[in-house]
Image 1 (cartoon, rainbow, N blue to C red):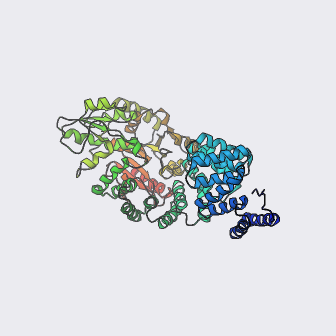
Image 2 (spheres, rainbow, N blue to C red):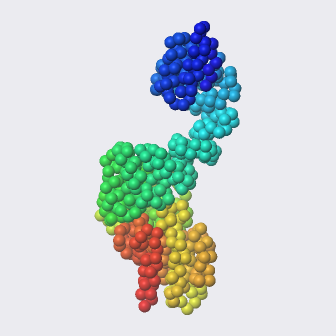
Image 3 (tube, helix red, strand yellow):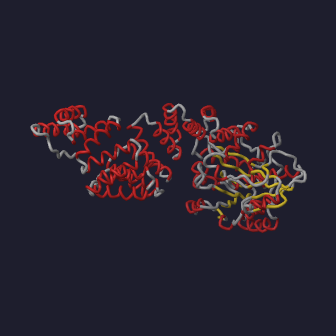
Length: 602
């Protein structure tokens, strides 16, 4: 703090001593004592600029920017060239919301003292408020250069970079700020959120864990910590933090919804339902709990209540960008005799396989039905009863307007047929006969004297939220290799195929994934097999749609479409379900598979 003054005649030494004492108290945080010394100075010299200045600083710290401005303006009238005073007056202007004035005052301070780090930092703050990110960054960088040890300057530069969308650079600044001040909660919160978005969940958790230690009443920190624990599949640990966030912010429907999601992940469905409904009482229009509650009801087989709520998949934060209204009427159940109808593609390949079956019902109502599906499914979708034509690319709006009277998203079709059976006669998809015959010859040659030919898929899409639980390590299935009379065919594609190396020499698996270029070839191969054993992937749906025996390996908390507890599927009569009893533990499932395979052979 600058205390260069011209004391009043006769009181020079006393004022100097009082000021020195006041500043010492001020620096040490004894603000009441500092204020007493400044007041004594002003009794002796009412316009003493340093006392006015620092009295103004105290007023600002006490939440009175108006008084601070009056005091500092009196000081400036006498010492207009005091850079520190100008800088603090700029802080007061910013506190009053006048960021243009704040910027002007900080610029004056920098003109007088170009190496004044605080002025550069505070000018950056004002420019951030004025929307000039580029100039704000320049001044934050200058402040950092002048005082490279300041955690606060590093944090502010991080803020500017984050707002500019330069996330890796922002993270680097926040990490530097954290290294210099490990317990600054603002830094920890900003850093944690960016790490969460970057899927660095363990690092993000460390940030939020520290905040809740430092600030146990910080509802946002509890919510964020629960969120990253969810991402790490640490649901048991997430639950108390969501509960705490909801207790601290009783109107926080998002925390209650996420609590319900964590409970769902642990298959605690009754508790989850209570909290989804509680979230909806708090925020009736919130799409996420409606969608999640819809899936919960569908899992229970409560279709009448579940299908309407399931429609909210299209309005959630993550779902909304993936849906658009097409430029013809969206079908609401109107008569279809003589009408042209488009089934619109959505979500994953398995979803499209599962629900395109409804084309037959639409055709029975008199519609000409076209199906827009993923290119990999085009030839198979053409074999579905009721499908007149298949589109494998998104149709242009103009073409839709000209060709169709109605459209419907493929997974919305069950909602339009209340009371109808939810499974179609199988098979409702058919492999190409010539391809199937070619595969049969190849499979027979590879199988040799084996009496049973089994296709195996052990891993799903690694990007799926629950892939950690849906996929099974191939080595966990090794006990199946010891069963006699079976020829095994790995129809695994994608990164999971690399696990074949781990069982080489111990399990004679014929690896065919690399030669399966589309679902038509996969379907032809499946037709030549006796059984498919698969985790919850599109292959399970394909085998079911083809009417082939398929055994589906399910996590303890499986997707809603496989229901609860049952060993059969309402969607695929040829399916048999094998369920974990404990999330992540495949031991019991493998034992049941061994027994089932031995029994089937006998």
